[in-house]
Image 1 (spheres, one colour):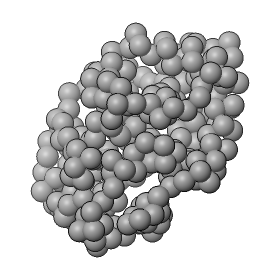
Image 2 (cartoon, one colour; image 1 turned 90 degrees about the vertical axis):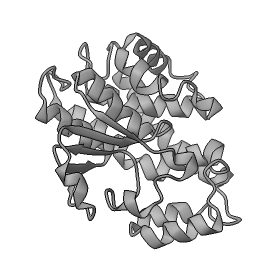
Image 3 (spheres, rainbow, N blue to C red; image 1 turned 90 degrees about the horizontal axis):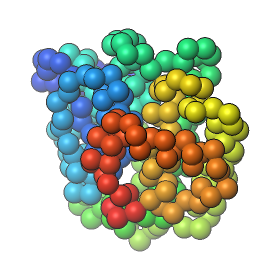
Amino acid sequence: MAVIVPTDKSVETLAGIHLYHGDISNCSMRVRMALIEKGLPWTSHHLDLKLKENISDDYFGINPNGLVPTLIDNGVVHIESNDIIDHLDRAYPEPSLRAAGDEDEMLEWLRLAASIHVPAIKPYVYATKMQKKLKKTAAEQEKYDELQKNEELKAFHAKHAGGSAFGDKDIATARETLEACFAKLENALEGREWMMGDRYTLADISWIPVHFVLVGCGYPFQSYPNISRWAAAHGDRESYRDGILKWCPDFSRV
């Protein structure tokens, strides 16, 4: 469980659930969906990532990685979206979003989504769509480098700093990882309505934002009929409409 002690002590006095999030962030999408599925009231603190509102002393004082989302649950600060949705389902168990059978398999899907975020999802999204929109000015880059202590994130953002950019090699490497994951997901969905069977779980919430964002980046899902069927079924869920589409109606137009 990714619980941290913030340097901004003021957030430890917050009562109830507070979410710092970004409209276009796939990680934020899954937390919004979980909150809606659970029927939990929450206070929104939206950060516009295109305006670099997350690159500030104030926000790094809450989340030392400067990433969204950050969830504050009665003064306790949680980071890392898959850990957050797992926390929400444990802390507020009704209605349950856990697998009725093999919970280990469900948690493995959450771990897999987390493990490929920086190595594959972010490079693909940046290379195909976002690097020009999220390009930092020299002053913004200097501020980011001053605040950011996470070496993996510093290395990632250095790849599109200044005159640098993600390119075809980065896309190819990311696609290799993504293809392996989607082949696994395609097989898992064979004969199943949802990833864990008939029951909607955290696994579905973890992966549908990835699908949504990658569709917006032109990722080809035509060869994955089970995934396409599963993704289309989300259109009937309030959590998908209000957790994703309300905030980001069409990622291809971001």
